[in-house]
Image 1 (cartoon, rainbow, N blue to C red):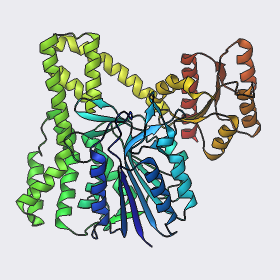
Image 2: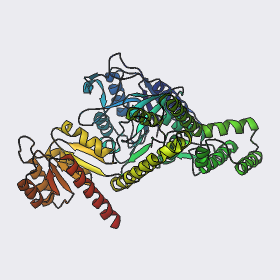
Image 3: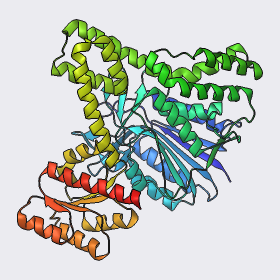
Image 4: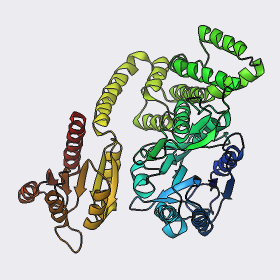
Length: 520
């Protein structure tokens, strides 16, 4: 058995390509190489590196690398760079020469996830781990904002299989961030830290499993950035227990680090509330005693504490940046702010990845209390309603069947903001194939898909005749009483051409499905 890895980082793109250059990916690759090759950490037998390749170089390297794998190998593929989607929302990995034309991806210039999946299936490899740190590009404030393309449902469709596991930097409704002034991407930074320090070994057995590494990185990422939630995607729970690296057992520095991490988690809320990243008096005394018991020098203890507290300090710094901006805006514009200023502040808050409740505390301190209280109460009421809606739609996955998916982009974006994930199909045959592979909470279908003018009914009839009772909504050009009645007679919830009515039917169906599952 061999442990082998292929690490790909793409940070340079041709001018005019439509992709912004990223400084971190080559550094991400170097850091991953360091920990995977280290005999006391990853202990990998072979680590290949590919930095800023063209599309053909990247595709050929991935395919030939997989062809060389043996059945008992542990194969790790790491990718850091821009991700992109075509109009069917299929995932692609960008290369140095990947380009867009009028904001649309030129698919031949990128490597599709579907191709990678095919190469994996054609290989003999049975244990495969994919680290995915890829997103779209954009810019907000002091951060390079990279819109996440690691959609959980899409990855499960295109990259998931037994014995394979995908670790992705964030969910489909969030953002991955690459912070200026920091060498590594935030996600990769804590993956590397978990291996390099051994801190990801939560059960202290001297081994770091994929599940342990994911949980460690997720906690550290969230401490620094509240808008990022790394995902681990696998099928039938296969892949969680793959051992990626080893950690030093009974190491005093590691024991002290875990003690510091434990108390940091306990005190995090108090730190943010008081805006002071400093251990309480009893915790400080406890850590000093632990340091003496483990014979940790003062300089070593300070280094460990600085590393553990770094993400909390990052978040505190971002809060301070927002507060400084709010004070400056108040001085320049007066209060209340006009709509343009309010929207700009909201965008700035999003770019800094700050939690609304933390922002409310700052507003109460900085803005005129008697004028801000009604607004905060209104926002809290809206948040409560949003939380209730999100709870009803949490982790819902809907199949949307339409031969022209671009016609429904705005509807999908609105529903995705409520927590619904979508899988797309452009034909009845493709829809049936996906329904055979995956269970959905609901189905939306258009009516006519050439050459079948009643393709919506055709799909519905096939499902109901097979015993599939998944909630079904027809979203088409007509909602006459005759069409509504006929759709219901055939077993659909209804038929509509009005987006708000579609949302109401779909959310009701998903909520009912979730409660039925819970009761069962």
